[in-house]
Amino acid sequence: MIKKLCFYLTFVVITINIYAQESRTGYLISNNNTSFPVLGYPQLFYSQFHPGIDLFHEWKMNKSEKSQLWYSFNIGGFYHRFIQTTIKLFPKIEYKYFLNDKIDLQIGLGGGYLHSFDNVKIMKLNSDGVYETQSTLKGRPQFMITLDWGLGYKLKNDFQLLMLFRTIMQGSFIKSYVPLVPYNSFAIGLNIPLKSKTKENE
Image (cartoon, rainbow, N blue to C red; front, side):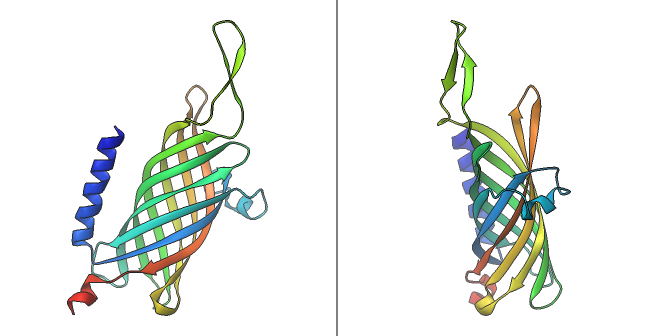
């Protein structure tokens, strides 16, 4: 299963890189809280801090300068000290609309693989009727769906400051009674330009 997924993602990335108009790379640093999707965003600024980081590489898929479609590949994770530590691996489709030369609005939809490691002790009843502490090193494979929205602000040398909100739906967390766990994130980061194929051909 993992080998097939890696092969598929490698094939997609190579294909997109061939046809992409431009590519960029960057990172995001985030705060992550469990709360009601979207409506729980205000808690990110006064509740506990649960840090996360994401690295991404993205490719521009059309030629328009004002209305742009991008595909990105993301890897990262976050630490929630009361629940879990996660590793994320997911692609994302993102639409960017440029208000002017400096500012663009962004909305994105993604989904992929999440691996979670419990940050609390897990006890399991054995055949002798005694509870034993289970190892948390192995973790659990999960799926995830993400919805992003935010903005970018152009800096010098075509670098871009990013600020975005993200909602993550993680599942299945506990199949019997918690099928999905919602996370909200606020992230800031930097988007770094790489060589544009259009400029290279000029």
